[in-house]
Structures are given as structure tokens and as C-alpha cells.
Length: 219
Image (cartoon, rainbow, N blue to C red; front, side, top):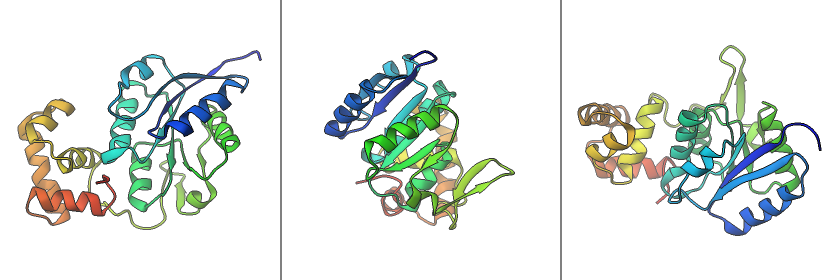
């Protein structure tokens, strides 16, 4: 097939699914698998260096790490399209996906052929959502983005605060978060107290419980 080839990277912890998708894509004209990773513990940098046009990202990676990966993709490879796969899609998960400008969110119940179509649509710049998920979203033409029809569960928190909250809820220290996000410890500490004030908690344990309850991370 003549024309550009869509390079796809896959990050998902369900190995059987990844193998099935890789096999399917190997038989699709105009699509090439640039690489795979089983979870956030594996090196993501080599996948990004391969320059994929589309990244298929399992939303249920442990401790909400899928959204760390998505944030890193947005920083290092802005043109890449990100399509999330979700077994369940609570509001908090959808909100996080939309905050990192997801180009698609699909249910794992979708057949592989629909995922292939989604990859092609995403590469062409067309948003793609499973029907059940699309029914819970609205498009804002002024801002040219999707948002939840209901009030987001983490309304009031900035994107940076949600990112910091995920790290703190996993047990990272302020200094560790500062190193990972290239911020000063003082800046992270200030954000920590702003977050706690906004969500109405007083200690790190309550902060972690909030993150689990709201689906920000998975225990």
C-alpha cells in the first residue's frame, strides 16, 4: 500500500490482548507496530523515540500510571495521538483522560476491528469514543475539546495539582515528587497544601484515601 504508514505503540499490562492486537495490526495495510510495553515499569522512552503517530494506552495501569505516561507523551511527543482502552470508565478516569487531551477512549469490549478503525481515525485527527462513553461527553466548540456532561469529580484542581496528587497518593515524598517533575520541593509543598485545602483533608493518609475513592489511582 502506497502512502504514509501509521506507526503505533502499545502500552498495556494485558499481554494476551497486546499479542492479539500486534498480530492483527501486522495484517493491516498501512499500519506498523513501533513497539510495546507491558506496564509503566518498563522503559517508555524507547517507544517514544520510535516516533509513533498513535499510542494505545491501557487506562488501568496500576496506581494511575497511565496518566503519567500520557502526560510524558504530551511533553516529549506532542503530535502523537493517544487512545485509551478502559475496562470500566468511571467519571474520574474519563476526566483524567480528557485532561491529557485524549484523542480517543474505547471500551475493551469493542472488537479488534473497531480498534483498528479507531487507530486510523486518530491518526487522521478524528476523535473516537465508544458509544457508551460518547453519551457521557459533550463537545465545547469554543474551546474545541470534550468534557463530562456531569460536574467533574475533581473540579477545582489544576492539571498540575492532579499530577502531584497522584504521586503523593502513591507514597512519594515531596522531594521525590519535586525530582520527578523538575520542580522545587518548596513549590511541591505549597501545591500539596493547596490540594489538601481544596479537597478538605488534613493529612497524607486522607489524601491517599481521597485519590483511591475518586479513582485517581487504583490500590
